[in-house]
Length: 302
Image (tube, rainbow, N blue to C red; front, side, top):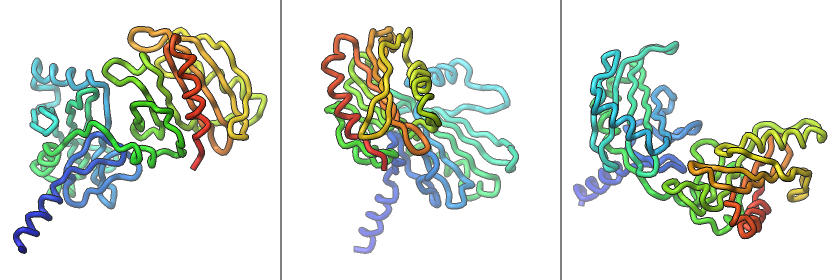
């Protein structure tokens, strides 16, 4: 019985760990736990850091092509290929120095299909006996991808509560930004081809009520991915009993300059502003807008 229990415990210890909300996981080395201030892992004294990020899908192909055409890059850093459960990854290891001292730096990129995964590891010189090149390589090789992150896990990361998801097909936390994406489309075809929403917090808020109109219009004109935007309406509203602003825009968006209509709601209060953006192809706007409004009315601060 004892050997069986030992084997079971060993198998469990080797299970990959996914940082909360993340699609990239791995089996962390001893002493590494999920980080609190970023997506990844760190030691208790925060000296060893494993940062995990998602990049556009094309990033992996660019690195792979560079590796094949120029396998030796400047400064004597030699890229290496590494087999993971997600397929072939590419990584580098080098010794660097900054204001805190000498450390080993590792960088790996792997393909997640619709995205690329980036892993950056920093190990101070005094920790390299435990976190050696071989040990770090073993951890990198354990990297794996999960296609879906449980919705409850993603919602728990948000600085706000969402009571209604508007029947959207895809729900995704946008990295460590504290923003939430709700979409009918996906990354492969492009989110702009179907209705989608982004909910997040802006760190600033107008100090005077007279500044709200200007603040709302500036925020609307800065919506990422929007091209040729024209504001068609911008006026004050009450959202859940609080002062807010609604702005509508006709624009084009995405790779193919899809004609879309967008709405931006800002709800003012506290140290920042709650920002809710809804976008739909212009011919789907009438059906999408009630869904946007239902989601908006179910968003509450924590």
